[in-house]
Image (cartoon, rainbow, N blue to C red; front, side):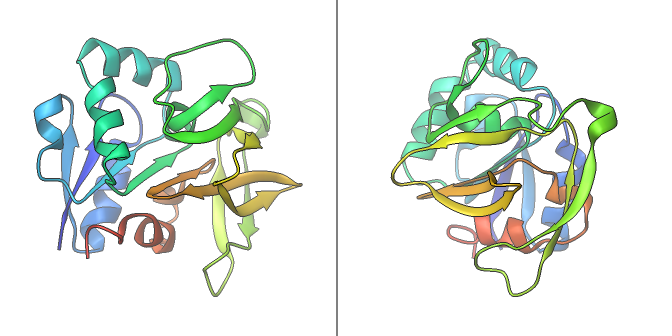
Length: 189
């Protein structure tokens, strides 16, 4: 199967790599621009979005990531990865890739002790997906070309725009690979 890059600057890198391996894909850590060469897909993991953005900038990854994603590379961002992919955040400012026409609210569901799990109805999946939300964002605004795939209390938590899929939750922690397959199978069949 294909090579899937996992942006390995901070966050749930190991958990995503294990899930990708279980699907028969070859995970490859991405820390510098050359690591993007030859990839069939890309994962931006959860973690701390401002830290990921600062490190991506420091290692010269921001423009190469934008170019690869705009070039059609299937890309999946979770939690902080969703924030980094977005075109805006509701409060403060930080470096963003701006490859997903959405405005995201950080920690929208609350702090660490407000973390929760819920079964989500997801467009395109035949059964609910058990989702783990940890200091999770939600999407406050979506652009015209962004499809909402799942919501919690009326707030989008899983969206897709072209080759980009972004989740406010952590599917890598569940052992259920259906969302990874949906997000990445376009290029890594």
